[in-house]
Length: 616
Ligand code: DON
Image (cartoon, rainbow, N blue to C red; front, side, top):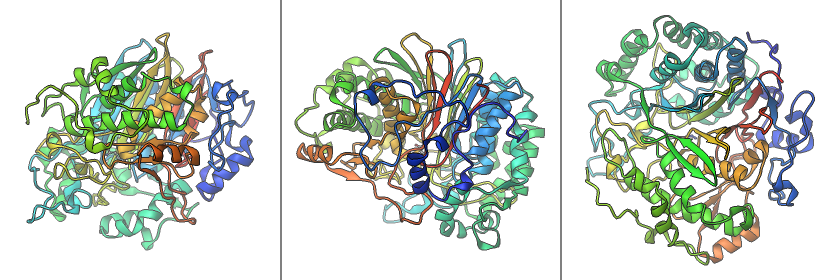
């Protein structure tokens, strides 16, 4: 099953052959053939973006002319080559996009422990070939014993307990979510979709992709004995090319294969999780695990220039915030303003600022708070909000209050995209929040627990680790789901047919990254590679700053934006010897349906993933 025998194209050579992102960026520039398909690369689709002469900034490391990966029988795009191959193997075995997504998610839990997970949660969007769209919430929940001020010290200041250690973990939802998606839509036997992850947990060859994040996080992981024992054997990061086996995790996966989610939520694995909690003064109990359920919710669907965008509703803030931004941005002709011109960035940043002010104030777990979702996503509201945007000057965030007139009662993530040969599409974003979550591995089970409790407002009005200043409605409470930015998204073209399947990690930047990917295609006519490669900007109301990726915005655009009163900040690159250059945001996995029905996909080179096609 793990052979190269599937027909199709690989995006680039195995990651272990490449030393660093900087090197890979250079390779991609110098040797487009290496980054493209292995054979019969099709011509790059005509793009007004390229034809118009617009270009990425001169020293931007990613290309405009690399052809995307193409295929007709299906495609899987993930942040990790192993996981993408597992997904394509499921398609080759007769599975549909949901089978492939579930197997891919479980594989990511093995090969991408910084973010792929059993100990976290996420959201899944499914669009079946019949056009029906489904949204599955398997976000973590606060343990029942969680309380509003549990992360404050005696003086009322926020501690790091929402970020590091046992108290930072919410009740994991991934296992329940993947099981439920498969139960409802899968066609392969459950055991078949779990088996590839078991195989990988018994041992896989260590890649640069695996080592890169572990290397950066090793000091923090060392603080937790079970975490260090499993992931730093011999007190060192496993060597590239060595075989890395995770027997305890393989045991959990075997029980998952044989007993379904009962083991994780009520059986041996549940007991291991609770024993770990007791060792580290955590509060999660067997009852918390037993009560966890994944929930189907109504997707947020909105129109953007004749396209229909489907994304996650609360407890994700993604769908609602993207709708609010898109409704504002639609009042300008982004293409005419020019891609990443000062005017286009200004319009986006002002729209982002306003929508995030509302997001941070109003959105939270729908099971706990009432939210005026219809009003927030309405054209009328967008018109009122957009009318306050001046093209001459930035509106300071201090002047942008949450804008509803209605009075309300107070009351390291990863993404994968899959399309199968029948046109079923799945987008999943899943997370344990920070890289390696709260750094706590469940002893005897070999997986990291999330630190997603930090996505609550530990102290309303105080920034969380992503700098998001969130309100009372997203305060901690027992059994509540914490607000998320994760936005798995599926876009239909003007003809109602499937066009894009996409998503990304990136904390608060997820929403703006997904939207810019859509703008890149819809407004600027970019192809799959260009839409992913293009540098990104971000604004989240507070801090009052326009962020741009290192070398991602022209000097003249920066100057003009500053003249208009924006505080413009370039992301800091990492140290030159790091595996990844840093200074970038997002890890987009994009699959696009071409006019002839074939698939064109691309995995973001910012972290080193791979899109793999099935059958030409
Ligand atoms: O759900 C959220 O919004 C966050 N837990 C996402 C965290 C994230 O994307 C970190 N990855 N880079």
